[in-house]
Amino acid sequence: MTGRLVIIGGGQAGFALAAKLRALKDARPITIIGSEDVIPYQRPPLSKKYLLGEMEFDRLTFRPESWFAEHDVELLLSTYVEEIDRETRRVRMQDGAVIEYDTLALATGSTPRTLPASVGGDLDGVFTVRDKRDADLLASEMKPGRRLLIIGGGYIGLEAAAVARHLGLEVTLIEMADRILQRVAAKETADVMRDIHAGHGVVIREKTGLHKLIGENGRVRAAELSDGSTIDVDFVIVGIGVKPNDELAQQCGLEVGNGVIVDEFARTSDPSIFAMGDCAMLPWKGKRIRLESVQNAVDQAEAAAAVIAGGTTPYDAKPWFWSDQYDVKLQIAGFNMGYDETLVRKGAREGSLSIWYFREGRFIAVDAINDAKAYVSGKKLLETGIEPSRAVLADPAADLKQLLA
Ligand SMILES: Cc1cc2nc3c(=O)[nH]c(=O)nc-3n(C[C@H](O)[C@H](O)[C@H](O)COP(=O)(O)OP(=O)(O)OC[C@H]3O[C@@H](n4cnc5c(N)ncnc54)[C@H](O)[C@@H]3O)c2cc1C
Image (tube, rainbow, N blue to C red; front, side, top):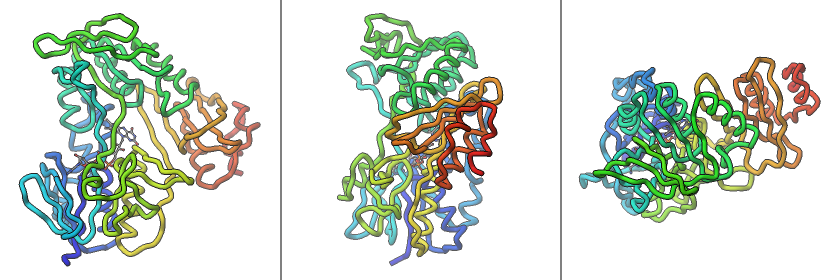
């Protein structure tokens, strides 16, 4: 036994796990194996300031390269793990090399869903945004006057639309569902975001799917939409969700659902293997969910680090999320799954608004649009379990501090 912790995936969760163990003064050998060719970095700016060209890559990295040697964390870059052998406790990499583990962590993240080749998904000029390479390729397409089609009205698609308009492109966004943000936010939030995008000149076409992309010499040129219309395009961004990278877990016989199934200690069905971040399916209020956020990647990884270091505290997810579009900051506290009621509150500042979600009369989440006070209050309410007064929420002049008094 080497006592070695091997972490597969050098992203948000993989890095947080190693960093937390070192912060806890845990001195075991740690190896991070990452398939990308750059040191660990944060992804959110890839569809925001980095794509806009307003943020350099070295501001995305969690730590400078020297941190890894200084903290005795071995980092294997450009290295893809192909197989886990639980019998011998070894992982095999694509070049055939093997490394032994005592404890293994799966922090493999997720992969954007793509369009099948049968509808033109394999044409040049069709992009997804997951890593630095994707964002760099995309940035080179973002030239004023070019025509961009975005498929999917989720956060990534809307953020990319905002960047593209800022850079002077013509943007059409299609959403197959009845409205944008259908999967993640209430109608009221979607209505505000739609208006903001329309005000910036994005053409949003809801209830409109893609029939197929049409290519010329292997490159996308036009798109046939489900309503029978055809639009000319120079390039396409596909933002139709992600799937968890759980193939390694499946192949070695771990319990897998929509992601690697873990318990409240981030342990998989094999007690020596942990999973965290986008690839993990965790227990939450009697259900199993996957959370695709920085908050979850970091907090779950840090909770796992404490367990690996000998602790016994379960991970209690306190979801929060944000999205930046134009000068609009959308901040979300809580998880609105299963909501059956919403309440809209106008904020004190022009353009600030919050949407409060309830399930069976209990407050579960808030979307705050340019309204930091609503976000902070909602987050505190969820942390303390205090139910907000509806009268205070309904009164735009009331101070939200009263909610916590
Ligand atoms: C463009 C974009 C914008 C986002 N914006 C926000 C935001 O505003 N707010 C927010 O909260 N969240 C945002 N997110 C989500 C957030 O970045 C993710 O939830 C978070 O990165 C998940 O961390 P992770 O460690 O699980 O996965 P990742 O950070 O994706 O890291 C996984 C790593 O594992 C590697 N890997 C996978 N398989 C293997 C293998 N077999 N061998 C070796 N390496 C492997 C991958 O290449 C990757 O480097 C955004 C994500 C994207 C892509």
